[in-house]
Length: 98
Image 1 (cartoon, rainbow, N blue to C red):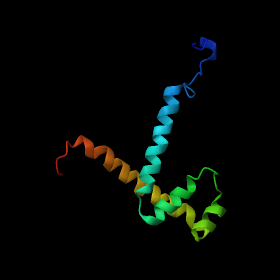
Image 2 (cartoon, helix red, strand yellow; image 1 turned 180 degrees about the vertical axis):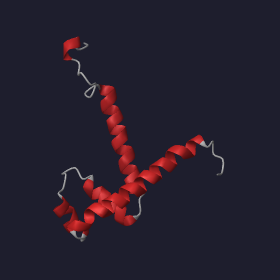
Image 3 (cartoon, helix red, strand yellow; image 1 turned 180 degrees about the horizontal axis):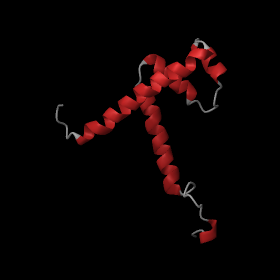
Image 4 (cartoon, one colour; image 1 turned 90 degrees about the horizontal axis):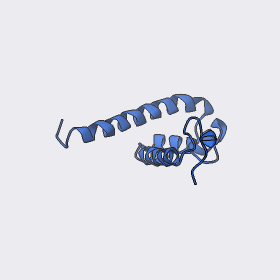
């Protein structure tokens, strides 16, 4: 039975469609991270860990200094951003070479 209007979430965050979209987004993000070069894959994979590790824990796991995590993370996110942008643009090209 449907929820009465006053019980519906105001922002739609808990609606089943949004929950499914978020799950799809998380799967796509994890898949993209898995395609990154080794160091970035390890770093971003560790940052996405379910137990929400601290920078200290991640640095220890990866064997790098805690101070280098921020700059490395920034470079890796840039790489991920470029990779995802290329994947979004490529299907629109209709399979044609650029």
